[in-house]
Image (cartoon, rainbow, N blue to C red; front, side, top):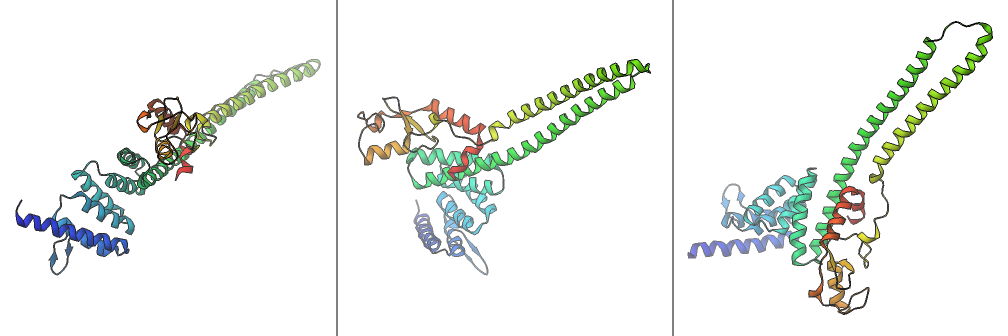
Length: 308
């Protein structure tokens, strides 16, 4: 490596540190200038210009843009960082936030899930992992909320159409009976009126039964959108929160990974529920339970609301 390249790398690293200092002091524009190049009367080559292949420079500048609310530039810088390092937790995370801000919920969820997988694997109890989970929960809840509003509006429209069709069928049946009536002798009128009353009553009963059936169908369709209690077996016995990354012990009890590891580290090496001796290497991922949680949460998006 030439001395010129080494010098550029060192200068870029110094500029990065300077940018970090500006960022901590909330001097965002100065931080952005340090991470990038400033174009004015003269050009001062800054960190990204000196070393454009270092992904952390791009994510640091994206963080400044995030603080300023410039989400388009956040998306652009994070995309560039991911071209350089596909395993960048911060790039996936901030790109997810930018996509969430632009209401691209499916893509935002994809990026945040990737950030959570990468970050959780390294340290499941890390502060940033909790941040990512909160934003992922927000994205999933918001996506569910938007989809639910659209679905309810469509269901309301279809239900009204069904009710109108049932009423029209009832009115047409009543009108058809009236049109089919024939002149009768006076002695037959009383008997005919009673028979007609029974027929109309029967038509009304059929109409009301159809309305009840329509209501039952649409109420059933809306059940998954009504918040209720999350099934107990999908929640950690320690936190009572829904599982994110469940693990199972030799005793057959499942816990949230980060919570169990913290218990083993701070409290003691034993199963919190059964008190049986337990070493960290004895716990294994409970993939079946994780899939069950994901399936439940996919169908009950309201369950994400408490976690953001």
